[in-house]
Image (tube, rainbow, N blue to C red; front, top):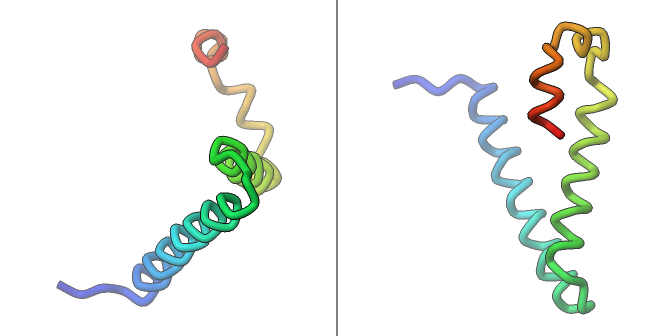
Length: 71
């Protein structure tokens, strides 16, 4: 089984991301920050990161029923 270079890089970046999340939780724990706040901050950063890259024209193609499910 052959692993491509890009697959290796993505796996390494995924591992680093998980390590950074663990570090964030430990640093927050030492400063009495609630884990929910850390998780929410990570979620907001991800939302901004992927939201900036999104093609907003694709939102017109989503059926109204799906928007109803999201609410």
